[in-house]
Image 1 (tube, rainbow, N blue to C red):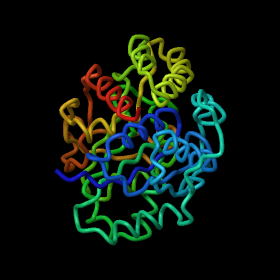
Image 2 (cartoon, rainbow, N blue to C red):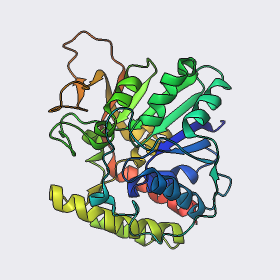
Image 3 (cartoon, one colour):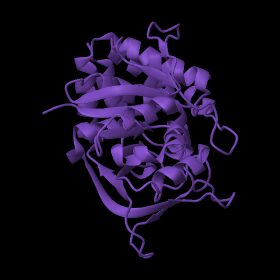
Image 4 (cartoon, rainbow, N blue to C red):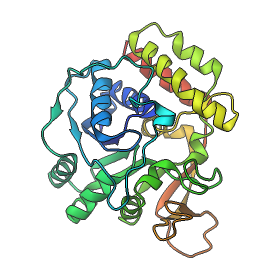
Length: 314
């Protein structure tokens, strides 16, 4: 079977970094047309550099990386150095990556790639704020029918917010772009905090990553050791949630997940609840479902898949 053509949009971030490595490990299953970077966990200059570093680490010098938007559509940028460190991927040896940055703007790359594609043909995988995707849709609405599916990391319902009382980070950073995406009419699968908080990097799982004898796995082990410390302290759990790789795991093994088709709206009006994903879980509004809201995961199967990808990169 032919590899699934995808565009990844990300803001590395250690969990984005692991997501990228998983995706780059399986070229026979995922045909990565390009990777676009957006400001989010850290500013754009760092997210695009970190993206190129992960492509280099994976040995994928053929990867095409594009820098996108340096701020949200309307609001001021919020970043998360307290979680990810000042580099965004603290725990990794930062250097000037050998993978070049493409000259084209990420939004233009997304538009041009989709306009050249057939309808219902390309899957978008955004794991950061949705600014690049939202602006691409606004710039050229004709791209929308070409999108097969949007598999994103963002939002929360039962878990509440991790950045405000009701909003998850990616959605809160650019709620207006998220509103554009959730109302675009294409199929959406959302990896929210409801499911990612079940994918904990426990001590045993982290040790299993560290036992893989290659430089990629050792780099992941080092990054996750740094990354986990914030969430372990914040949530009091045995390990931190590994958010963004859930998107790639879903594309590779959807049977690891369970979800429900619901209507999701993004609050863009109230400062108190700005960026909240309003999930009509019991369909009380009568609005048509627009999202496959993932709520359960086989966490052991997920980490086994992660480890398989890390071994493949050896």
